[in-house]
Image (cartoon, helix red, strand yellow):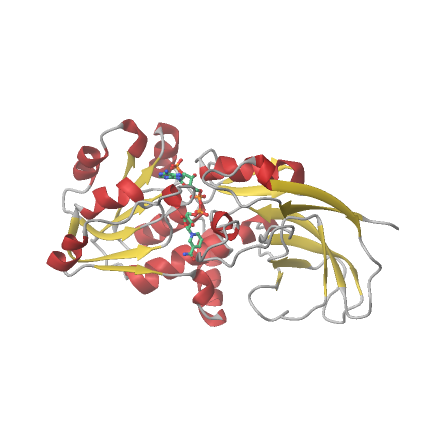
Length: 340
Ligand SMILES: NC(=O)c1ccc[n+]([C@@H]2O[C@H](COP(=O)([O-])OP(=O)(O)OC[C@H]3O[C@@H](n4cnc5c(N)ncnc54)[C@H](OP(=O)(O)O)[C@@H]3O)[C@@H](O)[C@H]2O)c1
């Protein structure tokens, strides 16, 4: 049976904000499977902020995509046909197979973390392995545990708090006995962060009085700032740091579409307070640490101590629009594209 594969290619390198015209759709006929190959039909594509960096011809924390190449992206899919002994039909497989409906995979790196067979436990939906139990969840775990190193009673502030990474980081800090304050855009997201995720407080940075609201929400200062956003929010939180504060620098989403990104100015606070800011990339963590994080997060999810939320659009045709929307905060939880 002839199978057609719709792919999304990088058509232009955006200057400033991404446009839908920066992407190009193409349709190809999939070749027949060769010995040792696996045909994977993708169920979901993950849309993540790092993809904005892959569109630039410049150094970013993610490797760039060449013009005319398929956009990089995490997927979860099902094996539809196999000529590889390690894969059976209907196996679930996650990997960085990109913005496309199908992949033909030669089975290499099956034990590495980039391509993994997934066995969802107790009815966990496959899509969750791209969110709370996938790269974003592991990012939250690694940034918080290895750099933040929370202690019970400390105050932890998390930006982009309703999103894929921030929601997990805040819930983990709460489980460890911290006072947790989220920062999110709008009342609906803030209500969710408090009422559903269980944070102690949440500041709506769009309300127009961030410094005052943050001061009210952090009467004892800030011991850990899990940074996802950068710009004015980073400057403002840095005014509230306590001595020996830690800032896991996870992302700077407010700056990804800026032609002249805003730097960090309050270096004096780091010196005066003996505070630490450390960038990290989840891909640097070894396979054992990834597995430790996923096991713990899976356990918390199964015991209902970890909650998550997804924004799902239907069909690969929606991917560019949904991606641009996510960069503008239109998503509410982990942004996914349903591909079948
Ligand atoms: N270092 C790593 O290894 C690693 C791995 C994964 C992700 N990350 C980073 O982690 C961060 C969060 O990623 P995610 O996947 O969890 O995305 P997400 O939070 O699910 O979605 C992005 C969110 O960013 C917020 N945002 C967008 N523009 C903003 C602005 N100008 N000011 C403040 N907030 C803004 C929006 O929330 P609001 O509506 O609340 O504004 C939006 O919903 C990103 O910076 C990403 O690059 C880093």
